[in-house]
Image (tube, rainbow over all chains, first blue to last red; front, top):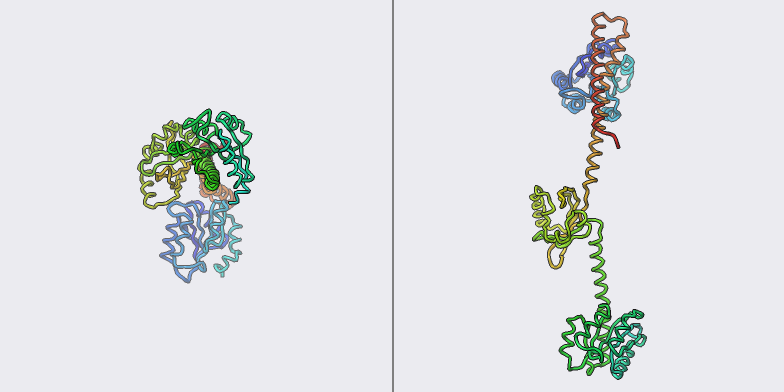
Length: 132
Length: 338
């Protein structure tokens, strides 16, 4: 399983990395500072046998989280092996609804992330294929 | 028509008793249930008409009365009847030409005494009364439409499709635009447009001419006499007015509504911006602050890490401070006074 952290806030990705590794969700997540570079990475390195867990922020420069979701079909994978978790500071119900409607999005987490969030993700049945 | 059932009030102005009795007889033949009144002189007739006790359906007027005769008699009889009761003239051969001429003054019909028959009288009386009724209805209907136009609370006018001249304007238009009736009638519809909108008007007129749409509605800018520019919702329909191809216009001033809507939309936009800012901009450093305090609680932090976290903590707090000040400023701009 590959894990991507897409957020322009470097300090956030640093903290997220720490929590992800500490809870054993993933041992080496890769950080990207906006949707564009993350999409480029996926397009160039996608392998059908691999599974992907992607944390995506909404509000980012260059390419935000919504635009990232619009482009994710071009990667070549499907919701069967690409699992997106939106991670945003937005508590706006409209944002949450919009995110969860997207076929790739399995969960919406409100910042700040906590250790509890990570352990919950491991138990989330929508993400179960990742940990098989 | 079952004339025997008709109940009319008929005034016969006739000094010759023999003639009167003859006419009365004839009338009773086909109008048995009608009331017939006689006035032997014009002054008596005037009196009877002025009393208004009886509303006469028709007046039979002998052209040579002891106290009056001729054209003057007709004119005064018409006046005495309030121009509201049809008059049939009774005359001899001697004044036949004049009787024919009298039709132009407003007399309904004329009858030659020497040739008077029940049938001729019947035809003339019934025809005159019916025609008068129809004319009255027509007048009332015209008046009703004129009232609808003139007393409409919304500005209305009629303009000539060719010359664009105003052909008629109503009270509301005069009040709303500030021009008098006469001023309006000396103007064209171009004169109530801001000069810069004339090309637009011309384009619309040309387009409507080619599409031949009978009904049209759109928003335009108009200019009042005092220079004030208003936004109006115009409805127009094609009519023939006094023989001219014309458009009837109904103008609804929506300036206030428009402004109100714009204000509300502007406020909504600002509120949406604030909601977005709260969710994405304010909560971003706040979330970081919350996350940082979690980390600062960890016991295995190196002095460098600790120092870095404290610096981040300060940065996030400063960012939050700037954002809050920005929101206060934006809210101030909103002037949520209403």
